[in-house]
Structures are given as C-alpha cells and as structure tokens.
Length: 436
Ligand SMILES: Cc1cc2nc3c(=O)[nH]c(=O)nc-3n(C[C@H](O)[C@H](O)[C@H](O)COP(=O)(O)OP(=O)(O)OC[C@H]3O[C@@H](n4cnc5c(N)ncnc54)[C@H](O)[C@@H]3O)c2cc1C
Ligand code: SF4
Image 1 (tube, protein in one colour):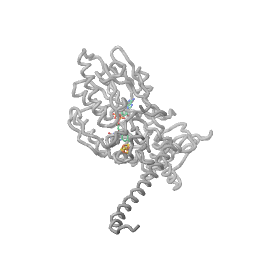
Image 2 (cartoon, helix red, strand yellow):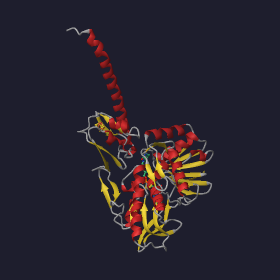
Image 3 (spheres, helix red, strand yellow):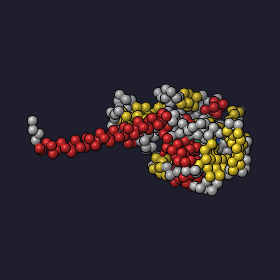
Image 4 (cartoon, helix red, strand yellow):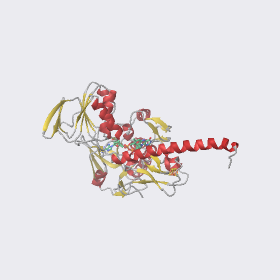
C-alpha cells in the first residue's frame, strides 16, 4: 500500500517531536535514577520532615510536580511515575501537591522506616505543659511564612493568657522567646507590640535556618506581616537580602535579641519557668520555644572547645584567608566547608574525620574533596580524633599516635543534637509520625 505524500508531510514532524520527547524523557529518567541511587548510597534516602507521599496508582506521570518544586531536582520521573529522588533535599514547600492535577500527592511527616518525632501542640500553640508554647518548624509547620504567622499567633495567645491574670513584676520577664529564626523574630516583635516584657535568647545569630542556607540561595516565600513593622513583601529573595531586611526591621522596631546565648535547661516552677543559659538564670511566666528542628550543633567535648576560635559552621570563607584551619567531620557540611575554603581562599586547610571514608556524603562533595587533596591543597586526616584545642595549635590522635598542628580556627561539623530530649526533659509529650 502506498502512503500518500501529503500524509508523510504531516507525519514526519509529529514522529520527530515524539522521538525527541521520548529521548528527553529517557535522559531525565536516567538522571532521576542516578540521583536516587546516590541518595541511597549516601544514606540520604529518608526525608527529614514534611514531604510528599505520591500515590503511584493515581500518578499519571505528567511531571507537573517535578517542574513545580522550587528546590530543583528533588522529585523525578522513574518508569512514568513521580518519585522523591533526593529525599533529604525536600523542605516541604508543598508546591508539588498544589501542581498535581490528579491529587496524587499528600504531604506527610516521617516514613515507615524513619518516624519523625513531633511535640504535642494544641490549637493555641500551647503544649501539654501549661505556659509552654511552641511555634514554627519545631511544631511541624515548616517554611518561613508559616513560621512568621505562627510566631505572632502564638504570642497573641500568650499575651491573652498573661493579661487575664496579674503580671508578676518580680520576674525577669513575662515571656522568654527561645530562638531568633522567622518564628522567634515575629513572636518577639508581637510581644513588643503587645507591651509584654520579653527576653529573646538565640544560641547563634539572627535568622535561624535561613542564616545557614548556602550563600546566594534564592529563597521562595510569600508576603507576611511583621508586627510593629508592616508587610514583608518578598516572594523570591536572596538569602542575604532577606537577612538584611530582618536586621533593618529589628533596628527600626527597637527589638533586643540576646545572641550567642543557648538555653541549656528549662524547668517548671510555681511562677512559671526557670530558664538556664551558660551565663544566667531567668524566671518568666511563660516560654515560647521557636527553636526549629535543626537542633544544636554537636560538641566534641574536648579541652579548649570553648576558645573563641572554635565555630560550628562556615559562614564567610573569606574571613579565613591565609589562616590554618581544621575542619572536623565526615558529612556533607564538613566536606563542603573544607572544599569551599580551599576553592575560595588561600587558607591552609586540614579535614579530620574519625571514620575511614566519607560514605555519608554526596558524591559531588566527595569529588571536590578528592580534587583538593590531589592538588595538595587539602590535608586529610582519616580515623583521627581531636584530643585538645589550644590557642595556636590542635592535638590530633590516630591509632595512639598524637600529632600537633598549627591552628588558627577549628570548624566543627559533627551534626546536631535534636531538640526532642530537651522537650521531654520539661515533660512535653512527643508523638511519632510514620508517613500517614
Ligand atoms: C536548605 C533549606 C532551604 C530552605 N528553603 C526555604 C525556602 O526557600 N522557603 C521557605 O519558606 N523555607 C525554606 N526552608 C525552611 C525554613 O528555613 C524553615 O522552615 C524556617 O526557617 C523555620 O523557622 P523557625 O523559626 O521555626 O526555625 P529556625 O529557622 O530553625 O530557627 C530556630 C532558631 O532557634 C535557635 N535555637 C535552637 N535551639 C536553641 C537553644 N537551645 N537556645 C537558643 N536558641 C536556640 C537556632 O539557633 C535557630 O536560630 C529551607 C530549609 C532548608 C534546610
Ligand atoms: S503532578 Fe501528580 S500526576 Fe503528575 S507526575 Fe506528579 S504526582 Fe504524578
């Protein structure tokens, strides 16, 4: 049978388009599979908090969720169905769920294999411990805008409750806000507007998790109102611009935040709560925990760790130019810190890790470290532990042999201690969510 030439004229471009589409799709599936196997090999195949659960029966493989995710290659299509291919990169934006045309996505906490512990929080943001409130990501509600909303709503509830009774002026504060991330900032602003005597304690710097984002990260958020200031209008904004904006808000409103002060203990008392930090003990009627879920940096607990040259993350590599820097750890943040210092400065960098290999880190970071080491720019000390830190040196031990290195700065990237034990110690009930 002869095919009419006119049909060929129309069919050829169609076949061309279909072939190109199939080739692109195959390439993207290969990339998704590679990402998923890398996540599995690095042990990063479990999402840390809120994440999409995709129903494979409902999924029609349209890829709308993949395109909608603002964090990049978090979702991917494999054999025509959407999968979470980089689970640990998911931050629970929920843009995928909104984009799915067939309702195949639900957002859940935890998985069957790895449960997520969430504190019990009532609709008024109060825990089962009267007077102890939780706002922001610690309670399970991540994202900047949600944290801002919750911070001020929780403070509204606290103000309402405190105004019902007689305020005890002998206390150090009506309310203590712990944490100065988005939830803590907005709660502290709301406390000021409500005329409460509030103390805000932050173990690190302003901005919480936002201050830890990679340099120049594009932050996706939504407009929100900051009490006493007005509207925060951003939808897409660079990390640094957002932090500068919050600094300006705090200065304009005249809010005082006590930085570098970590709350180490919280005890219930007749007056409300006693809060202990390394430098003081404070008494308050109520406490709002806005401490997020990243936890507190894990310490090595070695002599000299309290020296001011010891830090727990790399903020600005340029400040270490020309210096002797020891990075400690074997996960992504340690490898990233060491590689970035080598790539962007002339610092003399050594990476020390107690394990024999960097199996927990992403392939990309392992190759950066290998390249820096091969070029003679990065010293590697494997199966090595830090024994003590002195003002101008550090002492490292490997298989009983002690080595002393010249040192100006130690950057410890040994992970974080999750806040769950801290919550339990005050009696807060914790629930384990397993992806349902
Ligand atoms: C890589 C990454 C990218 C993200 N991108 C986005 C994005 O584009 N858009 C978005 O909306 N969200 C994003 N998020 C999520 C967002 O950053 C968090 O949901 C939000 O910061 C939560 O705010 P929070 O105030 O509840 O907690 P946090 O921001 O975590 O702040 C908690 C603060 O409490 C302090 N703290 C903890 N323990 C103590 C203690 N014992 N004593 C004193 N202080 C303490 C911490 O130092 C910290 O400053 C991202 C998250 C990550 C990890
Ligand atoms: S948007 Fe929904 S249907 Fe389309 S690929 Fe994603 S989960 Fe499947």
